[in-house]
Image (tube, rainbow, N blue to C red; front, side, top):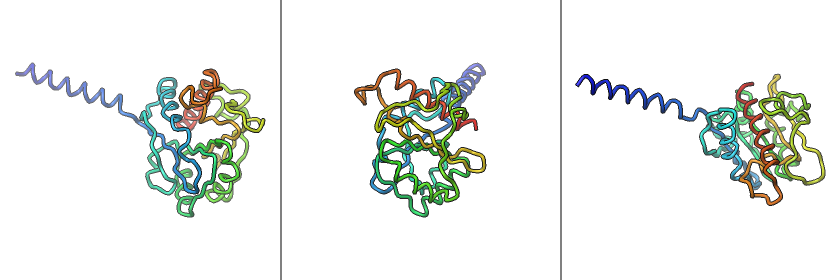
Length: 221
């Protein structure tokens, strides 16, 4: 009887320990915004980035991403929120206020221009931070020098207007709270291989490595 009790206790401890080790610590979300833009783009991007980060920089993200709205209190559950699209974006006053509260309270927003987002997102982020302007981050900024070095800055994933890729930031009280990737299409590079016929595995790997740098930076800054 005593032996059976020991076995049961050992099994319970093993189960609890195993559960503790495999339970996801973090979750990622995609931002669902109003205005008619295709917020739902890059459908396979975040699950692939999550898998790459969990395997290569030993993060512990939930395997599937979630969806969150800028005005929702649920946004505070995510250390990293991803936003993409081609078209119009509208933040209500309440959404702008909530997004500001999230970002100044420790949250992080990555905006990835999927081509055509730029003229819409800049005035909307002005609602969130009227006192701030996007500034281009220099190539020696720490976000480019995490596990994977990118000495020349962002990799070019897709070509649109023959412009160089640029990484812009909103810096609040010395902290980068929003990273905006322009003329890069970083999120496209995270998608399933074959989604875009001209993409190569080499280009996709560069995108995933840059994404991992971004996540590592967010979780350790």
